[in-house]
Image 1 (cartoon, rainbow, N blue to C red):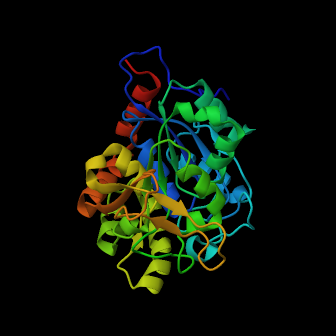
Image 2 (cartoon, rainbow, N blue to C red):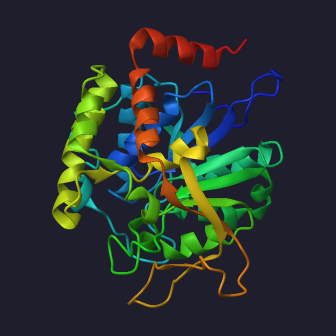
Length: 342
């Protein structure tokens, strides 16, 4: 397989945003991937990198490839990355996502191949050869791959436009510990590297993602679209919701990770504030806590655009519209336009 590591410069009218999604699918990661692949005219998805998180790496890379099959994007390069956090023992979340990570849809051996290159190598090579400040990184799992790439070669920072990540919490507290959101808890040392890398960071923490609930009515509307992708999404959300309904008494599962891609497509859906985010790496009591200086009570420098509010109805209108584009005739035409832009 040939991998195009950087956006093409041959066509001056190609204004799609080049992105790399780094993920640990997970039902909500899967929805984020499908949302991105349903936007071939806006987003140039250069590749998908996977990391251990919701389930071990062997399953996250397989799940990413299953989602590519579902989207009929077997040409999408998928890479496997880090099997464990930088310094801590691995933590997984089968109790939330199921044994396979994307339970609720059919699990099968995908046709989309796993690329032979390592995910971290792909990130480094892509950013080193990219135009200055051109590539957006979209991490929706633990930040191990991204931090490892930065620590391996800090010159890659020049190729990053911004990092739009799902992780952290302020007013919502933690979802895996009293203090920490799961992605940051899994690898707080990696999160510390990324938040302080010096490039613009946009953080979708639990404060905003817990507002985006896939209620039964919204899942019903997704299922009613009738195409195979929408039915798979409805199945995954039907499985995913059982944990949050039991834990929080909520009306459905929060779609954490798709907030990152929704922001790239329609940033006006979200409200944010420029803050400092510091990550607790040492205390076993509060490890993984994101200390968000929302009111600027310290002199720590601003390093993050912290999102705290979202137009929920607008988010689901966007999601349903994009999932509806998986009508095969329209979707194949959009993808062909993406491969052969005029």
